[in-house]
Amino acid sequence: MATQASIPNIKTQDKEIEHALNSILLTLLEKLRNTEEQYLIPFYETYEWPDGALDKLVDLGILTPGPEIDFLPCPSCGIEHIIMTDPSIVEDRELTDAFISCSNPVMENLRVDAPTWIASDADHNQAHVIRIPCKKLHLWQITPFQLAQVVAKLLDGVTFTEDIPDNSHITILYHRRSISLHRNYLKLICNPIDAPIPLNEFLYFEGVTLSFDRERLIHQTKEEPDQFTRVKESAQPTATQKLHKKWQEQYEYKIKQYPHKTQQEIAEEISKDSTLNPKEVAPETIQKILRRETKTPKNA
Image (tube, rainbow, N blue to C red; front, top):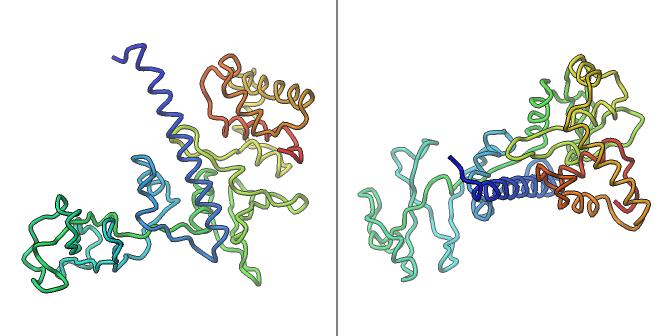
């Protein structure tokens, strides 16, 4: 049973994980926007991610395994060593270990007994063999179509590529409705009247759960909400809805008093107020809630 002293630590850890996952997601979306069709993530880029972040993104389908690499930059000498895998199972995606050969003394504590299939020659010296988990030898990839599939799953919908000349959009069908994701700009086209909206304004983590801002989608599409949402809106306001209303009121008050402040700054202030934010919701989530009912000012 958790003690009272341990509870704040658990909450803090959860907030840190949520912040890290949102930061990683924003970074991946930004890098994908600057590429053609996919962004490849080398294994060493994931080293600074918190434990479980890579597995979470893979489980959600945001990341999928990319091509395997043939050379490995050594963390000691910087030389790109040839990666050695057992030739009898080289095609096996479940292969657990590979090896490099490095004679740098700094790597001494990482050396292991070489498998018999590694040749004893100048390049592959059995005395200098270092085991590398194969999971670290994969490139991971993110593509617009993968993101469209993730969004479709969150909306209980399906995806397909529109038959248009430049093939620049991916259509997402859900509950007899549709939205389009622009491949290059990663923006959602919710209706033909309004400007496209960046995907990162809809997609975010709450804790370790990936969420999609359905309420904002309904507002942007200017359509009748589905049956589930109608029932929810007809009921009495929940505690969460009341809390969101307080955030909105605080934001409107602050923006009048301090018009130079951005929406992000006000969201951060609200997140630090224990009265307004008893559940310690992350500032990124608060800002997304504020966007639902607020037309973002130019300085936001």
